[in-house]
Image 1 (tube, rainbow, N blue to C red):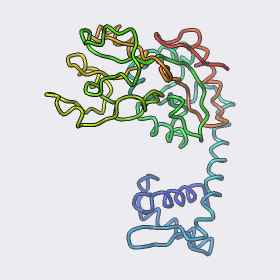
Image 2 (tube, rainbow, N blue to C red):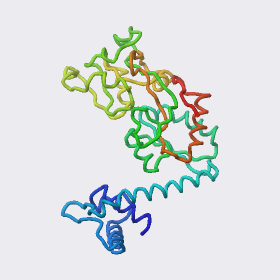
Image 3 (tube, helix red, strand yellow):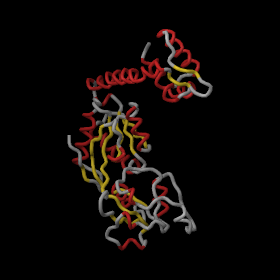
Length: 306
């Protein structure tokens, strides 16, 4: 028995099929199946029931899943702990960001790491919050920059900054005369909701997505990308929600947009780092936080404490 055997067992239990487990483990299906058979022969008991359309753990197989997870987790902790005794810059760093952050932070974080860790290789990955959190749990990311309300109970959240939220619209939109707006007052027929939650606490109070409300629109839009929506509202009567970070970048790029601040509860977004509990790369995060305290991105208020 070895660590790889336990990874196969967990993958099969998760996916319910040898074929999908093999893809997840990056091995051929025959190799995975043969290894599981060898493990069952070694243990003298079957781990899985082979059914017509799925594979299920036996009672014994089910009983050892938690043990396997614990063993693999402890092994990874040993690997992680070894990084504490190496040169921090010799180990690549992987950071995840959402589509409402990544386009406006690539230059900032490039400069941050160049100043703080000039020899470190850094990879930034753009993905949805739930996907990135899973990547952090799976040790494929060192940290994910997400809103506090998006964080999972399995990960540690370290607040880094807060930022106001705005209703974005074209420059000559009728709502441009407002000093602020409540989420409940956003016109439902003109509001385009983002397809995924990016951590806006006032989101439940915004107009619900309902095609019937927008049926009178001569030209309507349903988009997956945040910037597609923002480009659309530059030349339409529609509006959407943006954070201060994005709003400041749009201003620098001279987009023809106007931003009305939201008022009331939830008008700020708390952004921070989601990391594994006890992750030995905490010193890297501390130095990132210290840099942001000293030189924060335009439009945000640092909240980091070491």
